[in-house]
Image (tube, rainbow, N blue to C red):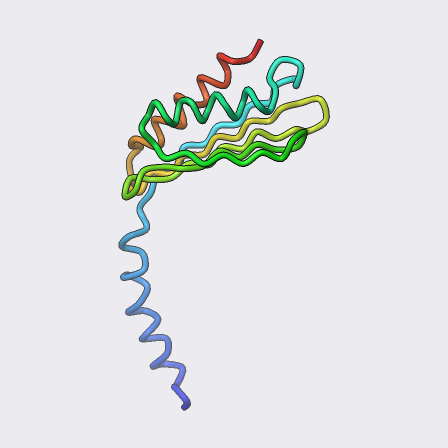
Amino acid sequence: MKVSLPIALACLGLASPALSQGSDFNLTYHVERTPTARLSLATCGNTVAQVARRSKLSVDMQSFPGQLVIVKGGRAGAGAFVVQCIAVGNTTVSVVQGIDYRAQKGVVGQYADRAFAAVKAAIK
């Protein structure tokens, strides 16, 4: 079946507003680099998981010893977060991302701010 270019472009033009209507979101993003002697991967991961539980967010944690800890979760209909605690040489890099499913910062973005502050407070 062949479709002419003008018809295909018209259909694409009609589809794009529908695709963009539900795309409003807010991203909160923090990065910190800390000497490993002052912040271990385990401490980084456990700290952000604890803050997520206190914030009543779902939490899933994966650990790759000596390399990476990933903590992810969120709240249905509200947003999702991903935190990565990454070993890079003698440095622990913590990356905290919170995505709220709305244009303004909400519960997950606020969690990202609190989790980042908790990681900084855990540094010895």
